[in-house]
Image (tube, rainbow, N blue to C red; front, side, top):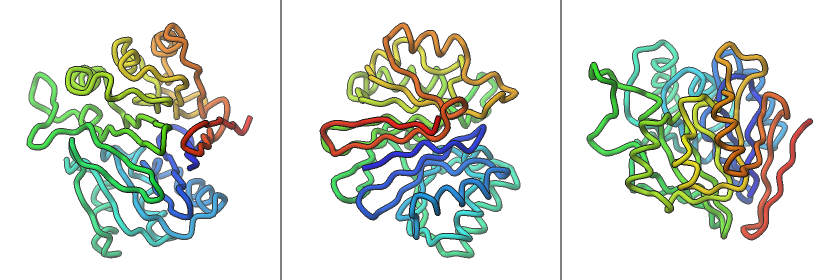
Length: 258
C-alpha cells in the first residue's frame, strides 16, 4: 500500500493505492484543481474506487468537481452534514450528474478498500452533531475520523478534528486509535493535536498537510511542540512536498519530495 499526502497547498488531499485500486481522502480546494488532477495522473490513477470527504469545507471538497470530470468515481462518502456554500452545491450537483453512489460514514462503519486494506470509522456520530455554545454546527469537529489498516500498519486520518472532537474520541476509543502514523488534524493548528490525543494514538510519525507561508499560521508552534515532546517524527507538505508512505503490511518507509 502507498499513501501519498499530496502537496497541493493549504488543504487536504490524500491518495491511497492498494494494489491497482485507488481511494482518496479529501480533494483540496478550488484553486488546487489543476494541480490535484495532474498529481493523480502522475501516480497512475485511471479511476477512483472511493473518495472520502471528511467534511464539506472548501479546502477538502473543492477539488472534487475537477476530479469527477477527469476520472470515473465509483463511491463517494461524506459526513452527511450540509453546509450553505457554492462549493458544496457544486459537489452535490456533480454527484447527481455523474450518478456517483453516495453514502454517509458514521461511527462503527467499515470500508473495505480491497487487497486487505480497511478504513474503520470512529466519528462522526449517528444522530449527533457537535456544535458550539450557540448551537451552530462545528464542521471541523464533525470530521470523519478513521483508522486505515493494512496488515500490521495503521494510520489515523483526522480531517480537521479539533480538541473537542479529540476529547470525545479519547473517551470512546482511547488506545483503539493507536496507529503507526497520524495525519495531523486541521493542518497542524494549535487547536488540535492535544497531548492526551497524541498519547492515545502513540504515533511514530505525524504528517501535516499545509500550504507554504499560509495566512493561518499552520502548523502552529504549540501543536508542533506537543508532537515533539511525545517523540513523534514530523513530516510536513509545506516544507517537504508530497509525503509518501509505503508499506508491505509489516514494515513501512517514508519518502518526501524535498
